[in-house]
Amino acid sequence: MFVIGSGGRHFEKELRELGGEVLEVELRKFPDGEKYVRVLGSGKEATVVSSTFAPQDEKIVELLLIGDALRESGFQRLRAVVPYFAYSRQDRVTKEGEPISVRAIMKALGLYYDELYVFDLHNPETLRYFPGKGINVSPAGVLAKYFAEKLGDGIVLAPDRGALNRARAVAEKLGLEYSHFEKRRISPTEVEMRPVDIDVRGKNVLIVDDIISTGGTMIRASEILKKLGAGKIFVGVTHGVFAEGAIKRVSEAVDELAVTNTIPTPVSRISIVPEILRL
Ligand code: R5P
Image (cartoon, rainbow, N blue to C red; front, side, top):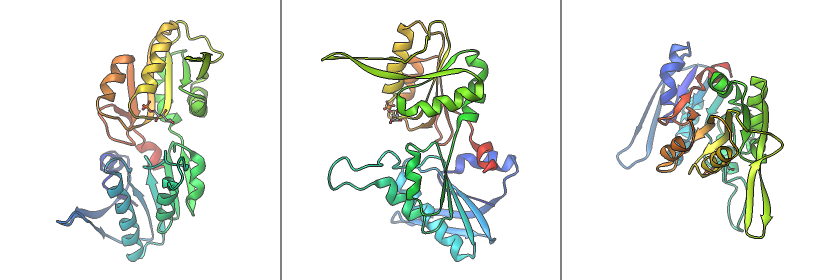
């Protein structure tokens, strides 16, 4: 039984079409801006689906209220599917006095939920902060399926070493080669960025990453690939957290930009709903 939060409405039609049973829930706001939640039904187990894109804090509070409402209504086992997990990049203290924000949110969700499923979490190790069972779901299957034909016998690249696992997972599904970009200092003032140990000349390339924000990373990578004589350049990313103008800038720099629908955007062409139904 699914309960759809306001960060999950864009999944609902497909979820129902593919056979998901959805419990009715009333979600609105009081005149002062506070959230009102009411669960219209009963049961023992429920899976609450809501991505925490902007306005993030509202969606997080709503997840807590839905959890509380479901417990109050007698539900005994609760799972939260939070495809895009807000605050995931704030996973360390960089200046004294800061919080580990991702930990705060995970601990709060742990008050109500037994299991937490997140898609392509920025730092999967942070799932240890969730008191229950925390699972990082890979989007490699849906990304690989979407790009398989376009990419042909191309290669898969990560924009940095940290994202290499993502490139590997997609490449292995497609039986293709993979690598990552690396920064190399060539003089005190110059840093060169290039793919490591792989020849991109004449090859179609798919660059994969967890998040696109300003698009700067992908635009830089695409410029380098063009200089190196790559064929078509595709960008496939899990979470389209696009800053103003980023979709246009990246789309103009590459042959195709497609992200999953963990966040609804005009280029969210790859659905994770079949994956949600498999959880
Ligand atoms: C960084 O650690 C992330 O994995 C992404 O590479 C980054 O958020 C992309 O940002 P932008 O699109 O602003 O270059």
